Length: 368
View: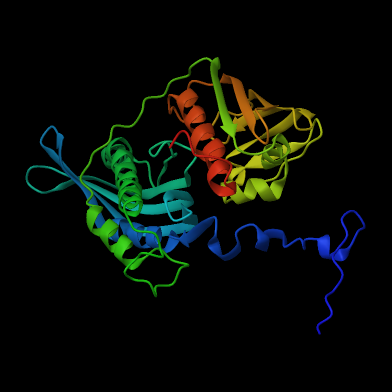
């Protein structure tokens, strides 16, 4: 005869009722909610192939002259890039990269004689998911600015920036296209591949597809008035308390943004999302009800802030709704990139609201 242990009694603090707090390890046990793959090595390889000792632009420039622009060296390539798959289905590419390139430009006449030459660098301090694909800043530095450098330097600025952007955008687009069609890791033919990197088949396909031909016209500067407004609402299959924590608990913010984040809940506290790409301060915080933030993106002109009201309401048993109203959004950023209202709206939809649902299982994404 085997003696059975007495049943745990409810509401008597029996230790068997207690569930161990697994911390971060308990958020995605055995990759149940999502898998994550490091694809920064792929980006680094692509940038080396496309920019290391490569002529990226050549042809007539007018007045019988011919220009040639060569990227001689990838001087710096740092950052993070990851590919996340929600329950083996939805794929999301997140990246934040810094890239510096060395360039040489030469202008020749019809007889092949050099009439102007120049050297310098292209610096891209933040290529990230938050901005439009081509919304990142390209800073151009010329080593010399004398009379015999003028034409070559102008060529590197007016034509070269657009070409560099086109190459980078093409790489991102092709990787997105290829990985969105790839099978989940459990179905991939390369089942024994290291899960910490993107499958070699996907990267090889993306590499072959990343033919760089497209041109691009740089956006003109526009100093629009800061009067843009967006209104977005989204329903979640989770209690208000849990959704509210996604905006006020740093660990939750870092989980769905997959980047460094900090946030406070007292008026005057600062917050930072996506490694500082979005920042501001808390104006108002009513637990499980409302947040008011002064919000800005790092690419906006110095001192420009919008006002973001986030309202949380119950929406049936165990469900909730988040309504976002953001006012004072500038029409363009400090670098002349227009349509910032749309950029902010798409960022909210895809990188915040839908990401919360995908990572925490709070419902079906609406905007992807």
